[in-house]
Image (cartoon, rainbow, N blue to C red; front, side, top):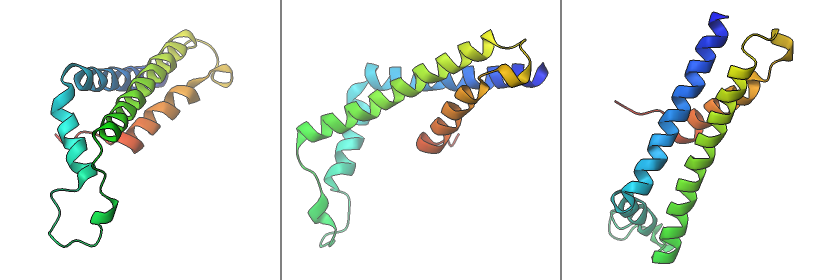
Length: 119
């Protein structure tokens, strides 16, 4: 029971974190958008860099990429909330009948793709 409860708390904590990250990117759109634009334009690399041919200077593509990032964060948050809800529903059912793998998959997916905060 304690293991299931700790898994539930972990999945819900990641769901809350992902929700806050997505909300932050939506509420303060331009603060992180400038970072995405600089990365795509590669304007902070050394002069004469041979890889500058792949820089993207289109603002439309910058907004599309940033929208894709925010969309992925929203999807990850929603799936973590769903996994946490399913863990809560099945907290007292015998282990072989539960769907805990759904929540664990999305938590590990979030940690692998987006990383954990440094601080």
